[in-house]
Amino acid sequence: MTTAIEAVDAAESPVEVRPGLLRSKVLRQPQTIVGLSVIAICVAVAILSPVIAPHPKQQVGPVFAPPGGEHLLGTDGGGADMVKLLVAGTRVSLMVGFAAAIVSALIGGAIGLASGFFGGKTDTVLMRFTDYVIVIPDVPLMIVAAALFGRSLTNIILIIGVIYWTTTARLIRAQVKSVRERVYVKRARALGAGNSRLVGKHILPQVAPLLIANTVLLVAYAIFAETFITFLGLGDPSLISWGRLIENAFTDDALLNDAWWAIVPPGVCVAVVVLACTMVGQAMEESLNPRLSVGHLSPRRFRVRPVPPAREP
Image 1 (tube, rainbow, N blue to C red):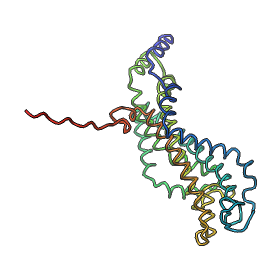
Image 2: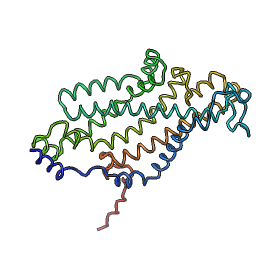
Image 3: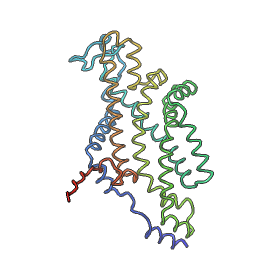
Image 4: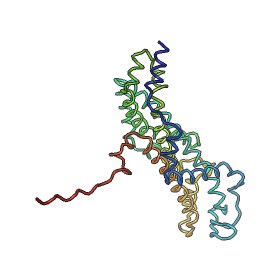
């Protein structure tokens, strides 16, 4: 029986996502190259931040000193150099973004996989639970959760990850339900393949690329969520992040002192990284999501052809 199942696996398996497919469809798109370049630079800065910007909170000049030769982006309300603060904030913001996205992908992927594969009552219960979580407003829930469970970095990561898993669950469920009904899955099941083999051999390899693409999009949501959570004063006060810099600028009355350099640079950093993650995630999803890669449905491939004029009799 095992030999028959392996023969079906080799003969009837679909064309899986190969590295060449990812390289040809995703990495050749200009928006992917730009987005990956920005993310790679930010990751490098985050890793090297202890070397590039040691002691970022140290006062090195007067309060709200304007940008100049000594301080390229001026100083904040405590006299610390803004460039060092931005470099130090990159580490925490990216850490929260990637970690929360992974937590969200694990929760949403597991629920979507179980719901789509087993169906029936399992699907009904899991999807109703997902619907209940979707209708809860994100910002009030984050505020209440951060106030109840504390403002540590770990709690912030878990709060964001637990809130943003619903979209992943619904997306993976839809794809799993489609893969589950394919001929090679039914033949493997008829030959005696168990659920673990069906999921590991046939289902998971087909939905994994879509899950990865959605996780990249979740990084953008997580970074933005960390920014406004920290701006509302619910972040870890002992750590420096881009949201913390914006909060400190408003607390220290940077607007009243016309110190735009204390507010604009952190906001620009958040916008650039969120845009880069969105560009990469959308390019990957468009290339790997079968619903978006269909020629007559893809926005990039849709073309309106002019109708030739009717000939006069």
